[in-house]
Length: 246
Ligand SMILES: Nc1ncnc2c1ncn2[C@@H]1O[C@H](COP(=O)(O)OP(=O)(O)OP(=O)(O)O)[C@@H](O)[C@H]1O
Image 1: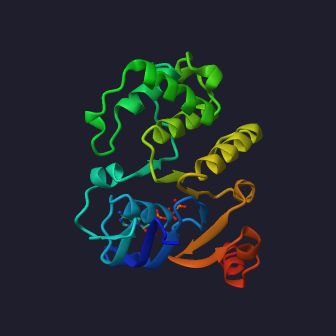
Image 2: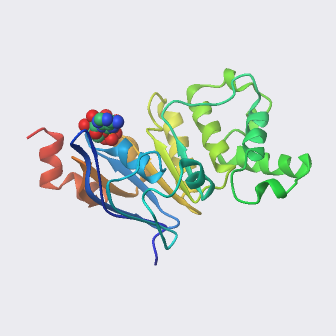
Image 3: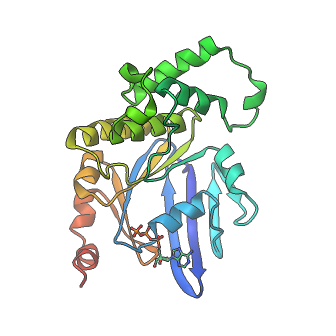
């Protein structure tokens, strides 16, 4: 099957330093993928390239079957085409309730033609309840976001991104600072989200990656070092050497 996103032989240098070096990566339309790699491996830069924040020096990117010129698309346009990104720190409107946060996200729909599609509040409400259910916040709809736990804020932000119905969701270290229980729920949210879209999770925590139970891509020095199940990549000699610093 055609991948949703295919990155081929992409490189980018900063002041002569190759942060991404001939990197190739592909992900399917309904796939969960973990990206791991030591500090400085290029994980953030890779996500910056996919979201249009950083333009690669060379290589090609194919999105939904059509080739994206490396320079021609703005970050805003790429977001409209269906790529959502969750940064590590939760960013929600602390003074607003969970319901209001989700409503704002629905109203800020960045998909093409969304502004032409007027929806009465009733319809928004049904969608808000659905989204809250998807991220485990059904019982917190009337709570102020600022009162939520760290984990709940992360879920709310994931819900706000899901409101935009992204085809690819990039999530940076979702498990950081979470309790064990919160991690379990985060796993369930991401696994469910990846049933109908592509989800890429950048994560340092190996226990969390194991829970995701998905294909893993190991980055090192800006390129893919290994790919496969977590058991497969952690048994790989090159991966072991990189992680043990040999
Ligand atoms: N704007 C920039 N200017 C110069 N060097 C940069 C820039 N952005 C990234 N780099 C360098 O590129 C390399 C890859 O960085 P990147 O942040 O993508 O790695 P990472 O895998 O996300 O690391 P971490 O796990 O620590 O977040 C690093 O050596 C970093 O110092």
